[in-house]
Length: 299
Image (cartoon, rainbow, N blue to C red; front, side, top):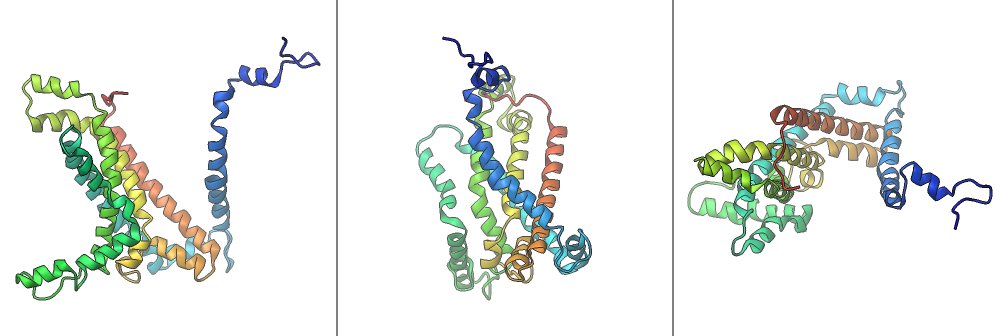
């Protein structure tokens, strides 16, 4: 049976196949539509909205206002002070834990379940737990004052340290799972070959595993940093939203939904995205300089 149309032209399915578009390729269309509707359009709309100042002054008035006011400008530094240490702590802590749990041992599932449990808690429950454990009347301060280490309760919440603890607790499971996936993807024969040549455990980790793991750690840091940089509930619940934890996301929320200045809120959101892109670009550039060889993975 001919697949040509009555006019003698090839059918649409055949013309698309000649251009490399088949049924398998068509499966990506829902994903592309989802990306366009829920990411590209809102981003482009917010970008053009950020150039519309409610007070006039040109297309860059909102950006000039943000960088001209020290109170607004400092939110970038305050957010970086939280996001960068949190991402570093999560990545550094994930390496030894993933290294110890990569093999098969009794109780491995239980240990991994406990390690990823904070994902199920959510930000609000994590903040409530921190207030209960690290607050002035929490058990941690009661123990310190009870055994005489501290004369009065330590200020561990409603400040910088409370938000940092919340970011570490909520972000560690993601860093751990990503690091574990990269670590288990490294070909075990490479480490075995190094052991055959007389390399000890530390030497194998430093000269074999760590260089192969470094590219994955860079990606893990980037994802952890992006999650931490967008901190909002923790900064409100266990932080000092008017002081040390007045992060940039709080300012964007207040501009858009309290002052109803949507162009200014969009401008702050664009600045947030720009700062994150700069940090991610620097980390990926460092990654490319650090190691350019094969990862030694299984696939």
